[in-house]
Image (cartoon, rainbow, N blue to C red):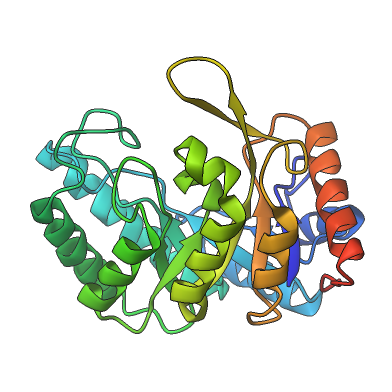
Amino acid sequence: MRLGGPVINNTATPEAWVKELKTLGYSAAYCPVNNDASNIVIESYRKAAADANIIIAEVGAWCNPMSRNKEIRDAAIEYIKKQLALADKLGAICCVNISGSRGEQWDGPDKDNLTEETFDLIVKTTQEIIDTVNPKHTFFSLEPMPFMYPDTADSFLKLIKAIDRKQFAAHLDIVNVINSPNNYFNNKALILEWFEKLGPYIKSCHAKDTILSGKLTVHLDEAIPGTGGLSFDTLLTELNKLNPDTPIMVEHLNTAEEYNLAISNIRKVAESLNIEFVR
């Protein structure tokens, strides 16, 4: 298993980027370049990572290919294709997005998100993206969300079978599907279910935590890993059964200090389980 997170300081050159990753103790990284970078620049980062034994974990393609606005939808699909092509050039593990929303908020709820019609549109759109780019080295993956497919392990498995593309895979963010008190207090069982059903398809994972408050009606907030209710011992144990290069990536924090605390907390859990991260 590999541990990583954002590089906040200098990434102006491949050498500076690698140096900062090594200083942080990361062996997995987020994408360091834009899709409009030259092939020479892209290759320089790919080679620098490979020479330093660093895996580029993911290239984000955060946009809304499910939008009812045709202009927004078409632009989103083209952007995803460019990001997937970039990921393939970089040799990244995956290019990741959410499936998208039929509502105005790209990552928010809508009455039509969890319908068969939208499920079929996700399948068709994903097939088009993968077939157009035809990636050889990277996977296109979706991240589960509470408001849209895939929202459960079963719906994700159904999507995988319906999309039916070798280069489609699962990106795991278990906090995104902890959307009830039952899931919160029984998240160990939830984690085990996801790995039991999707284990072979999981290519990467986000490291977040979550806290259930007493605010009505039900209020869940993201938290620094190790400060909330997530069973990190279960998550790390299950991830450790997958490919040794599987990355777990910290995200959504505000400062270098918060990221350092998150990484320290995760390492402490790993040490208690005798799990070693690739260095």
